[in-house]
Length: 337
Image 1: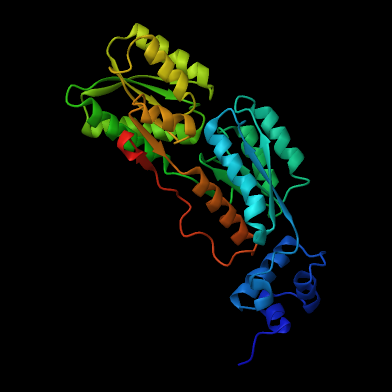
Image 2: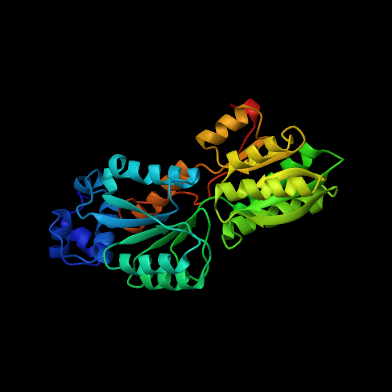
C-alpha cells in the first residue's frame, strides 16, 4: 500500500479535499472542528508534512490567574509565558489575565468579554455560580475550558488538571501527626478560601487522616486568609497568642513568610510544627533555615505542561492527550534540599 494521500486524509477526517488543502497550506476559513479532525488524522495516517509542522492557525488561550504577588500563581504565569516561546509547534498563544478571587463578578465579566476573542480558557478560581455560568456559556460552540489546580463544578469544563487535593491534605495530616508524635496537640488550619474546591478538599483530607491515624491531634479552628499572605500571618499570630495549646500550623495557601514572622514574634518557632504547600523560592529558603518543617509541592511547571498537552490534543495538534491529568504531590523537608 502506498503513502496516504490528501484524498485518504479527506475521507478519514470526513471533510472535502478543499478543506484538507486549506488546512495543509494554512489558508484559513476552516472551522475549529474540521481543522482539528484534519490535523488529528494527518498524524494518525503519518502524513509527514504535518507531523513536525507548526499548526497553521494561531489559537488564543486566555489564562486566568491571581497576580504575581502569590508565588504559586507567579510560577504558573512563568510556565505559560515560557510555552509561548518553547512550544511553538502547537501554535497556542497564551495570554495571562490577573483576577481577584474575592471579586467573582469582575471575573465573570472578564470571561464574557474574552469569549469573543479567545479559542480556549484556563482558570484557577473559587467556586461561584456566576463564574460557573459564564464558563458554561464560554464553552458553548466547542471552546474548551480547563480548570487548573482547583476544580469548578457545573462548568461543563473539558478537564481538570492538577493535584488530587484531598490526597494532598491527607498527606499533610499524616505528616503533622507523625511530627507531633503521641502527645499530639491542637492545630490551626489556614485556608486561602474555603470556596476554592481544592482548599476545601485539602482541609477535608487533613481532618480525615487525623481522625483515622492520629486521634491525639485535633483541628482547633479553620481560618480563611482570603488568599492574602499578610492576613495569614495575622491569623496565626492571634491564634498562637490566645491558645497556648496550639502545636501545629497547616497553611494551605499563601503567606509562608508572614506565618513564620508571627511564630518568631511569639517565640514559637521551635514549639510549633509548620507545614505548607508549594516549593517556591521564598519557601525553599525558609525550609532550609528550619523555619518550615515540610512543604508539599504539586509541580506547577508540570501542571502547565499537562494543561498545554490537553489543549493541543483537543485541537488535533497532538496525537494523544497526556497519560494522566493528575500531578503527583511531592514532600520536601530540610534534608531534601
